Length: 149
Image 1 (cartoon, rainbow, N blue to C red):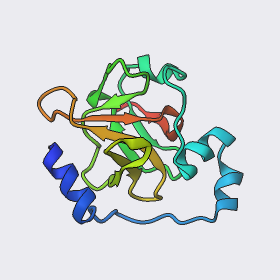
Image 2 (tube, rainbow, N blue to C red):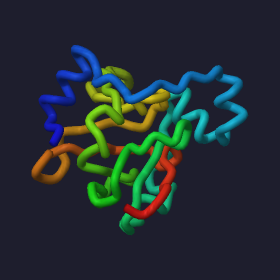
Image 3 (spheres, rainbow, N blue to C red):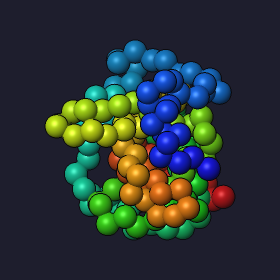
Protein backbone atom coordinates (compact mmCIF):
# COMPACT_ATOMS: atom_id res chain seq x y z
CA UNK A 1 0.00 0.00 0.00
CA UNK A 2 1.36 3.38 -1.03
CA UNK A 3 1.71 6.07 1.63
CA UNK A 4 2.35 9.82 1.34
CA UNK A 5 6.09 9.31 1.90
CA UNK A 6 6.17 6.96 -1.13
CA UNK A 7 4.38 9.53 -3.29
CA UNK A 8 6.82 12.28 -2.31
CA UNK A 9 9.80 10.04 -2.98
CA UNK A 10 8.49 9.15 -6.46
CA UNK A 11 7.82 12.82 -7.24
CA UNK A 12 11.29 13.86 -6.14
CA UNK A 13 13.53 11.00 -7.24
CA UNK A 14 11.76 9.17 -10.07
CA UNK A 15 8.67 7.11 -10.78
CA UNK A 16 8.17 3.37 -11.06
CA UNK A 17 8.82 1.98 -14.53
CA UNK A 18 5.57 1.42 -16.46
CA UNK A 19 4.76 -1.91 -18.08
CA UNK A 20 4.93 -0.17 -21.49
CA UNK A 21 4.70 3.33 -23.00
CA UNK A 22 2.22 4.83 -25.46
CA UNK A 23 3.46 7.84 -27.40
CA UNK A 24 1.36 9.78 -29.92
CA UNK A 25 1.59 13.17 -31.57
CA UNK A 26 -0.72 16.00 -30.46
CA UNK A 27 -2.62 15.53 -33.73
CA UNK A 28 -3.17 11.83 -32.99
CA UNK A 29 -4.43 12.62 -29.48
CA UNK A 30 -6.76 15.36 -30.85
CA UNK A 31 -8.26 12.91 -33.35
CA UNK A 32 -8.92 10.36 -30.58
CA UNK A 33 -10.19 12.57 -27.74
CA UNK A 34 -13.01 15.04 -27.24
CA UNK A 35 -12.04 18.68 -26.86
CA UNK A 36 -12.50 18.49 -23.05
CA UNK A 37 -10.58 15.20 -22.75
CA UNK A 38 -7.73 16.68 -24.75
CA UNK A 39 -7.68 19.87 -22.66
CA UNK A 40 -7.58 17.96 -19.36
CA UNK A 41 -5.31 15.05 -20.26
CA UNK A 42 -2.87 16.58 -22.74
CA UNK A 43 -2.88 20.25 -21.64
CA UNK A 44 -3.07 19.61 -17.87
CA UNK A 45 -6.49 21.20 -17.51
CA UNK A 46 -9.14 20.64 -14.85
CA UNK A 47 -12.81 19.94 -15.32
CA UNK A 48 -15.35 21.88 -13.26
CA UNK A 49 -16.08 20.32 -9.86
CA UNK A 50 -19.33 18.34 -9.59
CA UNK A 51 -19.60 18.28 -13.41
CA UNK A 52 -19.59 14.48 -13.68
CA UNK A 53 -21.96 11.89 -12.32
CA UNK A 54 -18.89 9.66 -11.87
CA UNK A 55 -18.41 11.32 -8.47
CA UNK A 56 -21.54 9.65 -7.09
CA UNK A 57 -21.18 6.25 -8.79
CA UNK A 58 -19.92 3.57 -6.43
CA UNK A 59 -20.68 0.32 -8.23
CA UNK A 60 -17.94 -2.30 -8.69
CA UNK A 61 -15.66 -1.83 -11.66
CA UNK A 62 -12.31 -0.70 -12.94
CA UNK A 63 -11.27 2.72 -14.18
CA UNK A 64 -8.85 3.10 -17.09
CA UNK A 65 -7.02 6.01 -18.67
CA UNK A 66 -9.28 7.50 -21.36
CA UNK A 67 -6.23 8.03 -23.58
CA UNK A 68 -4.49 4.65 -23.59
CA UNK A 69 -6.76 2.22 -21.72
CA UNK A 70 -4.27 1.45 -18.93
CA UNK A 71 -6.09 0.25 -15.82
CA UNK A 72 -5.60 2.85 -13.09
CA UNK A 73 -8.10 2.39 -10.25
CA UNK A 74 -10.48 -0.18 -8.79
CA UNK A 75 -13.89 1.07 -7.62
CA UNK A 76 -13.28 -0.69 -4.29
CA UNK A 77 -10.75 2.10 -3.56
CA UNK A 78 -13.20 4.90 -4.49
CA UNK A 79 -14.74 7.13 -1.82
CA UNK A 80 -16.88 10.24 -1.48
CA UNK A 81 -14.48 13.10 -0.79
CA UNK A 82 -16.99 15.92 -1.17
CA UNK A 83 -14.56 17.73 -3.49
CA UNK A 84 -16.53 17.39 -6.72
CA UNK A 85 -14.07 15.03 -8.39
CA UNK A 86 -13.89 11.22 -8.22
CA UNK A 87 -11.50 10.22 -5.44
CA UNK A 88 -9.58 7.02 -4.79
CA UNK A 89 -7.23 5.83 -2.03
CA UNK A 90 -4.83 3.73 -4.15
CA UNK A 91 -4.00 3.02 -7.78
CA UNK A 92 -4.59 -0.49 -9.08
CA UNK A 93 -0.80 -1.06 -9.36
CA UNK A 94 2.12 0.89 -7.96
CA UNK A 95 3.43 1.63 -11.46
CA UNK A 96 0.09 2.69 -13.01
CA UNK A 97 0.44 6.34 -11.98
CA UNK A 98 3.42 8.70 -12.08
CA UNK A 99 3.93 11.65 -9.75
CA UNK A 100 5.35 15.12 -10.34
CA UNK A 101 5.78 18.10 -8.05
CA UNK A 102 3.36 20.85 -9.09
CA UNK A 103 3.95 24.32 -7.73
CA UNK A 104 1.49 26.09 -10.04
CA UNK A 105 -1.30 28.38 -8.86
CA UNK A 106 0.70 29.30 -5.74
CA UNK A 107 0.16 25.82 -4.30
CA UNK A 108 2.42 22.89 -3.55
CA UNK A 109 0.76 19.75 -4.90
CA UNK A 110 1.64 16.43 -6.46
CA UNK A 111 0.30 15.96 -9.99
CA UNK A 112 -0.72 12.48 -11.11
CA UNK A 113 -0.21 11.26 -14.66
CA UNK A 114 -0.94 7.99 -16.39
CA UNK A 115 2.47 6.33 -16.25
CA UNK A 116 1.86 4.72 -19.66
CA UNK A 117 0.94 7.74 -21.81
CA UNK A 118 1.61 10.76 -19.54
CA UNK A 119 -2.04 11.87 -19.54
CA UNK A 120 -2.78 14.37 -16.77
CA UNK A 121 -5.21 12.71 -14.35
CA UNK A 122 -5.38 15.10 -11.40
CA UNK A 123 -3.53 15.39 -8.09
CA UNK A 124 -2.92 13.29 -4.99
CA UNK A 125 -3.18 14.67 -1.45
CA UNK A 126 -2.34 13.33 2.03
CA UNK A 127 -5.86 13.94 3.41
CA UNK A 128 -7.63 10.71 2.44
CA UNK A 129 -9.13 8.03 4.66
CA UNK A 130 -7.20 5.36 6.56
CA UNK A 131 -5.30 3.18 6.10
CA UNK A 132 -3.35 4.91 3.29
CA UNK A 133 -4.35 8.49 4.07
CA UNK A 134 -4.22 9.25 0.33
CA UNK A 135 -6.80 11.04 -1.81
CA UNK A 136 -6.29 10.66 -5.55
CA UNK A 137 -8.46 13.52 -6.81
CA UNK A 138 -9.07 12.64 -10.46
CA UNK A 139 -10.68 14.40 -13.39
CA UNK A 140 -13.61 12.21 -14.47
CA UNK A 141 -13.01 12.98 -18.17
CA UNK A 142 -9.53 11.43 -17.82
CA UNK A 143 -11.07 8.13 -16.71
CA UNK A 144 -13.21 5.51 -18.38
CA UNK A 145 -15.17 2.87 -16.46
CA UNK A 146 -14.29 -0.35 -18.23
CA UNK A 147 -15.63 -3.44 -16.49
CA UNK A 148 -16.83 -4.97 -13.25
CA UNK A 149 -14.13 -6.26 -10.95
